[in-house]
Image 1 (cartoon, each protein chain N blue to C red):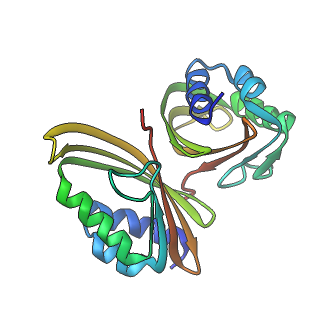
Image 2: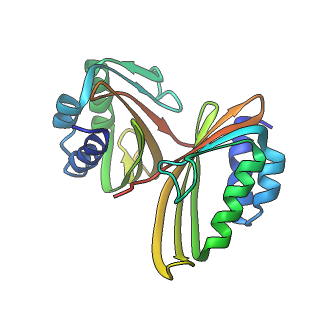
Length: 122
Length: 122
């Protein structure tokens, strides 16, 4: 797949909530995922598909999603951006919040090798 | 200014349409601006403030802006993203179109040293 096709496929799979298929088919096994800030008790950086899966499981276990909007992809050579706007409840606190962030994805050798999430922390 | 302050100031100035003040106060003199695709007859890359100003003038001269929405900033260490959604008319063709893109800004030594624009071309 070209970088443009990978970007479109990524957005299509995320919109269909097919996160495992997305990781399995589009990501490098050594892919790195970096948050703008560290989730409580976790590292900012997850290295490798298993660590990314574990972060995804933590997120799913701890949040109820009421509404998810995904905008993009926005390509630029071998990178693309995606904007995520989520209306969620953080299960442990019961707090409902809006999550608005941008993901930046870097493709190497036909696979997503790096994902970085951009968002404010104040 | 911290990277977070630069990001917020950038968005505030762009929302107020203060592009020259934005370049003058927040950008490095050697800043580089890279488009996802080359505008007709132009390079994808503009190097230095004068080249960035010239690109901005070309854009302003050739487009009428009906509505501009700016979302962000979305920070991540010394970078931040901004989403731009513009409703514009391309003056030469009279064609009205929606422009939806993400800008990625890189800060070095307290100034924006690089801006890259992400958008689809098909």
